[in-house]
Structure formats: C-alpha cells, structure tokens
Amino acid sequence: MNVIRKVRCAAALVVVFLACPAIADTTLIHAGAVLTDASADPTGPATITVTDGRIVSIADGFAPVPEGATMVHLPDHTVLPGLIDLHVHLTGDPGGDFWKEAVEPDEWGVVVGAKNARVTAKAGFTTVREAGSGQHSAFALRRGTAEGLIPGPRIIAAGPALSIVGGHADANGFRPEINEILDSGYNCTGAVECAEKVRLASQNGADVIKITATGGVLSQQGRGLAAHFTDPEMKSIADTAHSLGLKVMAHAHGARGIEAASHAGIDTIEHGTFLDEDAAREMRENGTVLIPTLMAFQGVSERLGQGIYTPVVEEKIRATMETAQVFMGKALRWNVPIAFGTDAGVFEHGRNAEELALMVGQGMTNRQALASATTSAAEVLEMENEIGRIAPGFSADMIAVKGNPLADVSVLESVDWVMVRGRQID
Image (cartoon, rainbow, N blue to C red; front, side):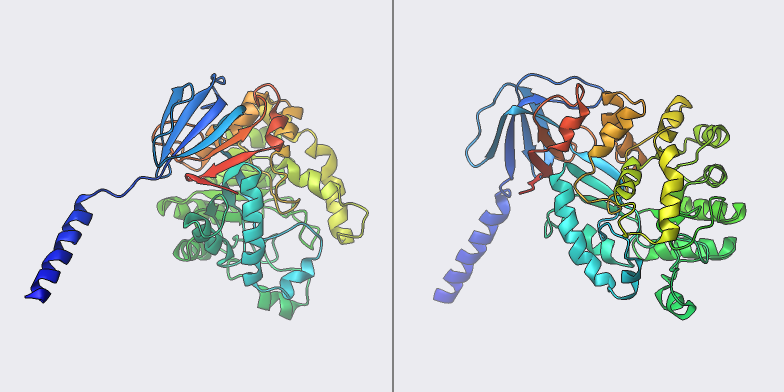
C-alpha cells in the first residue's frame, strides 16, 4: 500500500512538472541609445528585451526589470548589432614560421582557436566566417561556441581549402616527401576530381567551400597571380557547391583569376588586390562580392624587415603594398559589391575593427562601412533574417560602445559589452 501511494505521488509530481512551462531566461538591456540597423540613426534611451537568446522587443525609455530577469545597465553607451567578419583564421596566430605546419598537430589549432574565439568576440565580432583551417579544428570550435562551452562568436566554417597541386593552400616549402605527408587531401586536378573534393568537404562538415583561385602572399612559392584552376574546374566547384546549398569563397589576387572565378559563379572574392575594370565588370554583373581584407596588408607590412618572413614572402608583400592602399576604393567607384572581412590571424586577433577605418580611408562613408560589417555581411551568409540588425525575432547578437559609429567608425575599436546568442561574453 505504501509503495502504491509513493508511486501515485511521484506520478502526480511528474504531471505537475510537465504542466508547468520552463522558466524563460530573460535579460533587459538599458541602453543610452540603440542603433538598430546601419541604415537607421541612433534612438534615445531604450530597453531591449531578450528571452532565450532572441530579441523580443525594443522600447523607448528604461523599462522596469521583472522579477527573475537580468538587467544590463548601459546608460552611457550605444547598443548596436554585433559585427560580422567574413574572413578569419581563428586557429592561427600571425608569424612567418611556415615550418610549424610540420611540427604542430591540428589539435593545437583548437587550443589557439579557443583563445582567439574569445578575443574576437570581446572585440565586438559576434559572427565570423572561418576561411581555412585544419581538417576538424574549426568545426570543433564551431560546436564549442554554439553549445556555450567556449566563449566566442557564431562560426561559419570552411575547413581545409581546395587548391591546385602546388597552389597557395597546398603544402609547399618542404622536401617533396614532407609535402606529401602534409597534403590536406583537398588538392584537385580536373572538373570531376574538383567536384569530388567539394562533396568531400561537405561530407566532413564544411558550411562554405574555400578555394585558392590564385597564388598567395604568405605561401612559400613566388608564382601564380593568374587563375590557378581552369575554367571547367572552377565552374565544377561552383556548380557542385551550389547544388549542395553551399557558397564558395575564392582567395584571389590577380585580375584574371578574379575575373575567371566570378565568371564561374564563385560567390565572394577574398582580397582582390589587383582588381581591374574588366574583373570588376564581371563581378558586378554576377553579383560577386569583394571581401577586401585590408587589415591583412596592414598586418604583414608591419612585420617587414624583421626576419619574420622568408625572402620570397617579403618580396611578394612589397609587391602588394602600393595597390593595397587603393584597390578597394577603385572597386567602390566601379560599383562592385563589398562586404567586411579582415583575414585575422595574418595579424593579431582582436584588431578586426581597425578594418573599418581603412575602408573609410579608401572612400566608404562611416555608414557604408558599418553596413558592410552588419547587414551586407549577413546577406553574404544568407542570414539577413537572423543577424546584422537589432529587431524582434533576431538572434541576440549585440555590442555596446561609447559614441556614435555613424559619426566616427573608429569607436568600434573599443567595445565595452558583448552578447552572442543571448549570452554575455565576460
């Protein structure tokens, strides 16, 4: 009898528990001003309500805080959408020691990446596109930040880049037998093999396909501003990725490589250093977006002449320095779509927002620069209904700064408060 009574009591408790809804996690942010969108102007004092990681409302004035809710009081700050960087390498830090690829395991990249994920979020970047990493290191970070185990931004990850044999993303600079051991498994020759590698990347967890469409600055070979992949190879990559619902980002410096990649249907051009009018026309007609990564050029130029880079790399850096000061401005005048990306990892993580002032220096307005890192970047990711704005239903990705970034974009270089997916980053 006592056993029956106990079972009935336990069953009643289960019924009561199931009938009661879970307690919502609610935060109210009191902001001195709110900039909801790069196309808007800052409001007066306002309250943003966040429940279970989503923005519920934005109301004028400082609303009372209900019992059980958390309050964030920022009366001297402007709260705006979290910034988006479309080109980072969280699993690496700057330097010229290419040989470390032969001695450091991919797992070490997760340790470095965990450090850099927090630094990047603290700098105001609540979403990033990881533009090339070891086989699974960026994917591990992606899961860690999504589950709240690692403080950091939302991560859209490419994993290993596709390259031609001996191209920018292929292991080079070592003896042939070492190059072979370090091969990522993502080099391809011919349209069929390139399609296979895209499918392999998708199978292994890539959110986006990264290719190296031309040579690069920091790899240990001096050739390669022209298109590396053939036209059929690049079209195969683009068509296969798109059939799987994936976009393609192409590292490309030389004009003909840029033009060929855009013509093939590649979605974004990373760097774009030697862009010319013909390449710009192709990009404009195809809606291909330029990710200029001006901070990459800034970062490597700061390390010239210090014995950090090998002679072949130093020579390539010097060859890009002059055009790096003007090419984005040309793209802007030629009406090429532009979105924000920095190549963080080539320079120190956390300096990402310095890109904004460089963009303004090449002709963007403060408002255009902010849009490039919010609404425009969200559109590139096809997440324009999720991030890039402060609006009901959007993910609670927000930052707070003192000052108005529409008057001076450099205020974004000093971020005092960050929230990613409704979680405050300490």
